[in-house]
Amino acid sequence: MARASKREEIAQAALEQFRTRGFHATGISDITSAAGAPKGSFYNHFASKEESALEALSRYAAGLRFDLLDTPGRPALERLRAHFEFLSTDTVANGFARGCLVGNLGAEVADHSDEIRSAVQGGFRRWSTRIRQVLTEAREAGELDPALDVDDAALFVLSAWEGTLIAARADKSSAPFDAFFRMVFGVLLRCPQ
Image (cartoon, rainbow, N blue to C red):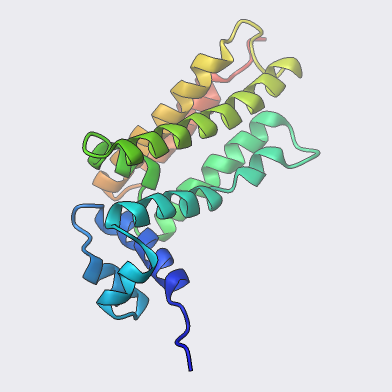
């Protein structure tokens, strides 16, 4: 009788381990132990730890709740705020122990792996594009200053978010999130009267 594949468990465990421990601090044995799988089974599904990190990035993106940006019937900026509120709530609920995997791998591994750097770059590009789309919609609806450069604003909002996550994790405090929401939604994206 053939054994059941442990790929799903290993892939999910890799995502969680990379998010909480980082790439370099996570060993194959950490991943397989968390998955309840024998260490050798890792290589039945992934050629390398780097390959499992690429899979983890893909899985992470699927959990970022981009659907909140597209909720029909809600104003654009309200949807954008809901997206970041979900992410901040998730960080607090997990004891500030899990950051953004895209940002974490970008800071930790991108200089050493062209494949991971490319995946991180693509992840940030797609996320920024989603934010830009929402900001464009808000500007067209009169919610934003018509002179606002939505490309620059989207990149700034995403960059500010990544810095906010680092500060919140370092402080083990939601104060950086409060500052993010005040500055981004109360100052930057406020439509002049």
